Image (tube, rainbow, N blue to C red; front, side):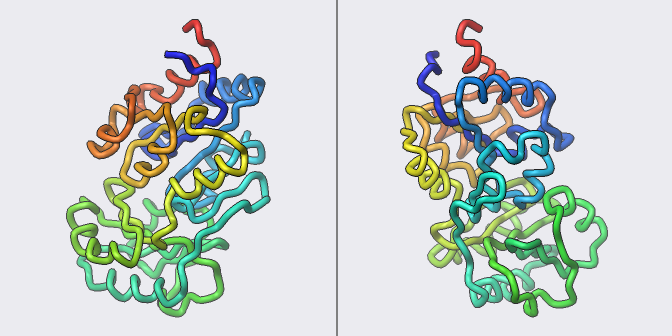
Length: 268
């Protein structure tokens, strides 16, 4: 396969660039140096909080583009390039609905930090892997002074079965995405990784034929459609495998790195 025209590489984080221990490999950082030498731009695109993505990619955090909160905010270094916000009224509407769902935990994802009202210590420890900057508050309906990107809803066993089933009737008002085994995200209808990536492609003057995208879950579907070189991980959701043009190894088998090495060393 000829990757010589690739100018932009976009990767999801969880289940994709991150292994099951939530780590980015040293192998990736070595490959990134060669991508940079070839003037190939790299984008980390995740449902994670901006601060969490920057923490995971700390050595290169000011050199790459970051699409965080499922497309809610895009930036490079400290320069915000684009945001898609959710009104306070809509945030409160979602919070009130989710409170009715058994075992659901709610995260309001803001620009300054994330907000939780849970006292469940098991959830809080899990949550802290994805959210570096956060506040624990008594009442989420009293959170007001921030710019809000999405509501993330956690379920301890199966978010698609127990959360999505309860909120899918919101799909005419919100973008509702099963973003992982434990997570469903609700945001504005225009807030998704695809919209954020399209804006970035337009700004950089980079075509679909020059773009490579890696993903594993339903919140990656729109951005996979914006790349001629779209890859589903071996561990991907069936919906992702159906959309992506190609597949690669799992996130625990260096699936992203295996393809990137072919980009930087075409003879491999």
